Length: 401
Ligand SMILES: Nc1ncnc2c1ncn2[C@@H]1O[C@H](COP(=O)(O)OP(=O)(O)O)[C@@H](O)[C@H]1O
Ligand SMILES: [Mg+2]
Image (cartoon, rainbow, N blue to C red; front, side, top):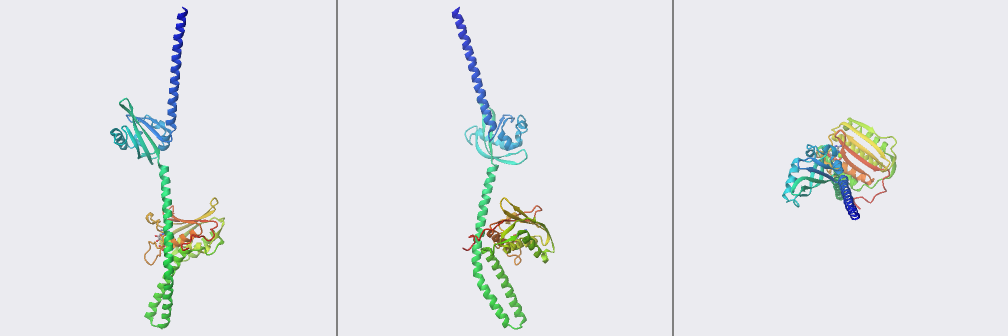
């Protein structure tokens, strides 16, 4: 009796022991399961699991963020899958996975593909996938992808910066070259002028000869002017370093130009805050920069249209930016990189020297600032000049040290 009681209690305890073990295993399984689910859910990468029929079973937070859909919009709806994953690409990827030629059988090693965001934006991703099997039976597949947009953006920016550096380097070396050439040409030009003027005195009043000599002198003076501008571009030491008012300076350029014939049909819109801070630099040289930009704008518009000049002070950087926008045809993207190079011009021979913007570039650089070309809201050209409130003391960045 006693023994049987003992036996029974042993059985009960074994049974209880069994039960607690099962509960414990179940608890551990649930725990492991929810742990795995947590990993899947919160992974930065997008994880999408579909069954054989293309019904989405899992659509994690990473996928929500990368593709813009909420999991509940996507899960269970067989139409949705094809919206973000091109069915043709999907079929091709399945074929590759089954063939085993593109990684281990049943797997797709990382490839670059494009998914489609809910907004329609194409999202480049690194994508890998695997077929899910139960025994030998295919039951679905899982795709894992990471967003490449940020990565590609940074790469583009780096390339852009590298390109701009090259461009600056190229302009600087062109500057050195043209300074050398300008120097060499300057003296013979002065010689031609002197001899032409001497001849002029000798020819008396022979009208045809006088006219020819005048032409020689006129053309030579034009050459001298080009040479002077070249030297300006390549050497510009800051002529002076004084305090000036940017608003006044810009307004004076406009006043000086607006009475010239080229500007009769040009409207000026000025948006210069009265409280722009006082600047330090060479106002004479900057006036040349602004004049060049304004004349270019009027040329581009064939003398008809609007030039908008706006200024802004950025207290954070302690810089003033000036924008010159025109209502002309704008700068074609394919020449945007070239316009600051000396001698680059799209104007007919004789009417443009291609030096205006390179001179402007050199002067702005000497002031420790930057100049950029872009597109104005109406499609015209937009030049932005950014100058530090106080330009640095004469820099060592001259082209001909
Ligand atoms: N406001 C503008 N709109 C359109 N194109 C411009 C503008 N400013 C400059 N450009 C382009 O840049 C080129 C170079 O300008 P620049 O260096 O001043 O030389 P130039 O005026 O002698 O041609 C111009 O020939 C023109 O093609
Ligand atoms: Mg010009």
